[in-house]
Length: 201
Image 1 (cartoon, helix red, strand yellow):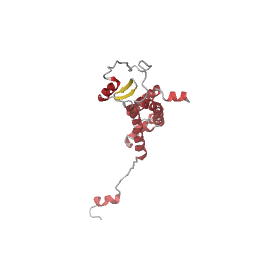
Image 2 (cartoon, rainbow, N blue to C red):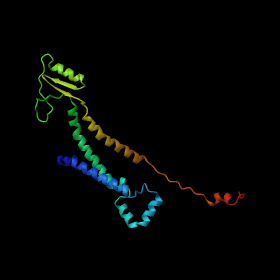
Image 3 (cartoon, one colour):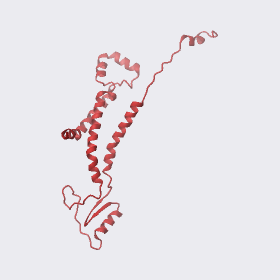
C-alpha cells in the first residue's frame, strides 16, 4: 500500500499527467469540437469525411473535455494531488511552528543555524527583542533562539494546491447545473395568408 501511495504521490506522475492533459487540450484546439461547432457545420464536416469523423468520435476527440480519457486523467491528477497534499500538510505545519526545539548549530539539514557571540550587556534577550522589532518571529530557548521572517510563507504552497480543488468544484458545479434548450420557430401557411392575400382576413 505504501508503495502504491509513493507512486501516486510522485513528482514524475504529476509531470506526466500535466503533459498528457496539455496534449489532450491541444487536440481540442485543433479538432472541431461538437459542443462548440454549429450543428449544420458539424453535420457538413461529418458528411464530408464520415470515416475520419466516426473514428474521432469513437476516440472521444470531438468532445475531448467531456471524454472518458479527460475524465480519467483529471481523476488521476486530483488523486495525485490529494496524496501530495496529505503528505505535505503535516510537514508544512511543522515548518510554520516557531516553538519547536532549537537545534544545536551545525545540526543536519539546518545550514541556517549559526553560533554568535553576544555582549553580556545585550544578552540573548536583547537580541530577541531586536529581532522582534525587525519583524521576525522569535522563539527563545535558553541560550539559543530561532528567528524567522515571513513565518507563514510555507503555507502559501498549501493554499496554491487547494486552489486546484476550488477550481474543480466550480467546474463540476457549472457542468451539473447547466442546461440548454432549443426552440424551433416557424411560420405556417395560415400565418402567411394575410400577407399573401391582403384583405382576405
